[in-house]
Length: 453
Image 1 (cartoon, one colour):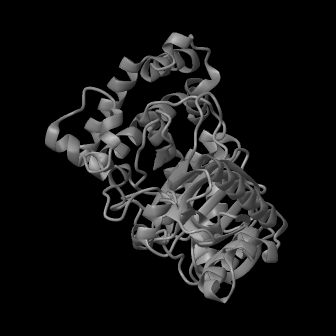
Image 2 (image 1 turned 180 degrees about the vertical axis):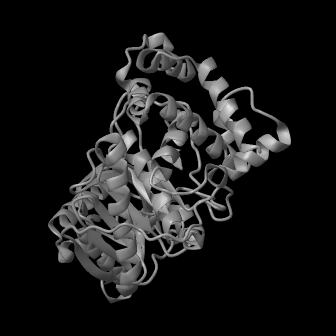
């Protein structure tokens, strides 16, 4: 599944429902480093401000400006400490013995950030979510601030990735330079370094960030190598990827920005998430493995899922224009199942069942057919795969890659047609293959009809 950032590009779900197989995954070797799990108590929630407030004799405008400047200075100092892996400076604003639990949590966070390779930390914005209220002179006051930051992972990100942090701050208005932090927690979406017990393994092609034992880390690293080999065999290269394997589905949902209990993860074994700017290549994608569905898959099913997601990451990092979901998801399935020896009817079972019940579709799957919870999701993946296999059988896999590259940015398109994704694909079909959508649909329907027997 590729979950597009909130920039007008659609979301879809990647499911390898037919991939519950019992074959052995390929292996390879590459230089790697494994760090022991870095543990600490779970991050506490953001504390509410106390009843204390700002001294009434300090002009509110002056105090507000001083607060803003002091918070910015404090945040910049902590970011600099994180870049240097300076534990003393990182923990300095967290107070003394009364903040022991927070200091333990934040010390572990810094260790995980260093192990992951976090760099280029920058402050983008800060805004108060609660402000201190008036109080007697000499009284320390508390207030809440939401800090917007960005970072990159060394060796993997070519673009920054944003995140928000909620802080509760405490200071005496007369001495704002002595400001301290009394609570710190992710705002909404946590980052990998917020996962307690995280293990880190880095190689030239994969950064594995997993909660669990060493065997789990090794399996994911091994399958990441297999996926990279399979993607490169079709696309020509595979992008180095960041793989995150949290301990629970709840953690996976939070990493993907989904609230507890929110629909959309049921049956999904992995999802790709990352920011996209129109006209630019993706440069900070993450692949999140969803534990419950992931563990239900047999070995080659896991390879299919990881190859599918790495196809998305590689394509997103190589192209600049969105394509219809039947093309993007169908292509990812084409690559993922290319090395799998399984009857086509088994691979596309949900699609065949839908056709048997409802008749031959008159057109290729629409984007809305890929929406979670619609009941057509798995069938849409199968139908998209069969459409791409139809093109590959007729014109060759290389031509399918050329088609995708053309539709996703290689084909010159007038600016007033950039939103017409289907029309752009039609032009690319003619340019790269000398065929039409009508011919594709007719051949696709013939293929579907043959699977009904």
